[in-house]
Length: 346
Ligand SMILES: CC(C)(COP(=O)([O-])OP(=O)([O-])OC[C@H]1O[C@@H](n2cnc3c(N)ncnc32)[C@H](O)[C@@H]1OP(=O)([O-])[O-])[C@@H](O)C(=O)NCCC(=O)NCCSC(=O)C[C@@](C)(O)CC(=O)[O-]
Image 1 (cartoon, helix red, strand yellow):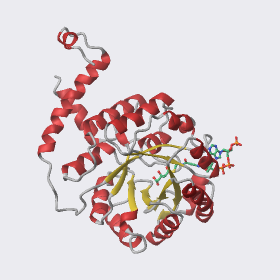
Image 2 (cartoon, helix red, strand yellow; image 1 turned 90 degrees about the horizontal axis):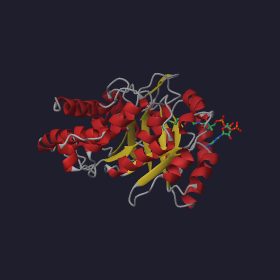
Image 3 (cartoon, protein in one colour; image 1 turned 120 degrees about the vertical axis):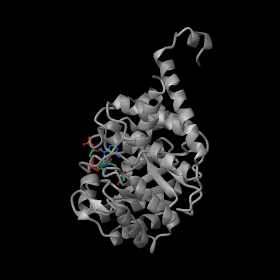
Image 4 (tube, helix red, strand yellow; image 1 turned 60 degrees about the vertical axis):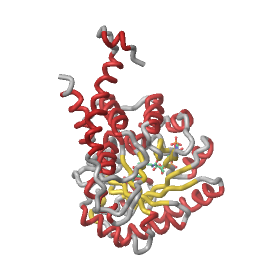
């Protein structure tokens, strides 16, 4: 903690200076809280924010993040009020070397009660690791596009679903919760446009296996609001909307608009990544996920209950991680908070 004498004498360490920088955005966003407006745009009162940065975010960054730093990121996100966090993935280290320390990361995170710590698993081997580290929640991932499935899992869509059946049965027997993903729900980097009916087929299969929810992934971040509206209309004819989450990448800047459309359709779970980190290694050209900071800013501003997430703390984490990765901050809100803090220093 800072000592007020040291502060007065100008003896601040680098870390303490950073803390100073971050006190000011708190004041800035305090003004935003006043402008919180209960909007009639959506009927949803509560949204579950699912933080996927430590997994989806870091899997595609060129710089390897050391184990302790990954662990700290997860713990800090939880301390900032995030209640659902995808910690890592137990995939092949040959395929995703950035997460080759995943078992150590998952085991090292100090778990807090009431928080869902998820790990992504692609196959029986990954599931065994999930059991070894006592994961309570796993995520399995399929695709609506055959080519993407082959590139991402080395399996056709039906082969992947067949393999997940036994993994899911085993997971349920072990008392685990299972989240499902469908990738390439609107467009595929290899096949182009994807039919919503195909997405519905895969989502139904995942729910039948026991997934409590299926997150619909716009893997390349190309979807527009009209397409999302149509997708959700078609999929929700076969899947209760309460079982759907959305997962937008922000390549074309439409992610937040897409979230709004999803909320209007009744979706109440949204994935995002701190600092807008990431992308998928098997979706060339795709940008990072919708930034958590931008999502939190919008939802809190609309008066939607997201469970007490501290925007300033999340923004600080996004800023620090982007700086470490030597990449631009992918969050507009994070950038605004940080530049306002710098301006208020001068
Ligand atoms: C599924 C495989 C492994 C098949 O890949 P494969 O090459 O067919 O598998 P294999 O069984 O032949 O194994 C190859 C090597 O990997 C090892 N291996 C095999 N499995 C594991 C494992 N679980 N953990 C650790 N090691 C493993 C295995 O032991 C072997 O090692 P070797 O004997 O050669 O030394 C591979 O395709 C894979 O890892 N795919 C994952 C790719 C990935 O992580 N993609 C990104 C996540 S999905 C995503 O980002 C989309 C999403 C969810 O965010 C939503 C959206 O945005 O759309």
